[in-house]
Image 1 (cartoon, rainbow, N blue to C red):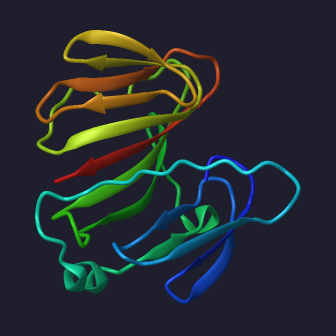
Image 2 (cartoon, rainbow, N blue to C red):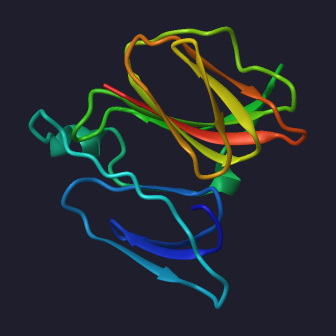
Amino acid sequence: MKEGKLQVSLAGQSRTLGTGSVVLVMPGEACELAATMDAPVAYFQLRYKSRQSVDLARGKNSGGSQLIEWANLQYAANEVGGRRQPFERVTAMLAEAEMHVTTLNPGLTTHAPHTHAPEEIVLMIRGETEMSIDGKLQRGTAGDLFVVRSMVPHNIRNVGTEPAEYYAFQWR
């Protein structure tokens, strides 16, 4: 959820979710969304198809569809800001799917440039950043999307005066 409140009905559950919350939907399951008030509602939607066969049993065994409320996500402070972890698990289509939310304090860098096998998508939520991808610097602000291919060196620096926040997705 980018902003606002949304009534979400999924897998026998129905809840009102607020800003920052996450909905994870299994293939073939119906998900109903409805605005709950007169204020605008905005959300991001990430859809994908697997090259491999869908394994619904594997997805259900790892938790199935989920409504993940922002208020219930534990914030783990660290030396550069902090992190929340909505999920890290197998899904019906992926051997591993991971999402984390990083808060990066002004003037700091996440870590030295590093690589990893999973590809990664970074969605900027707020703040001003500079991401190094394979040695090339790219500016990013709210709504910008970075795509990092497997084994490409990368890191992010907060170049603004306020904390920056972004969602990071990795999969394999």
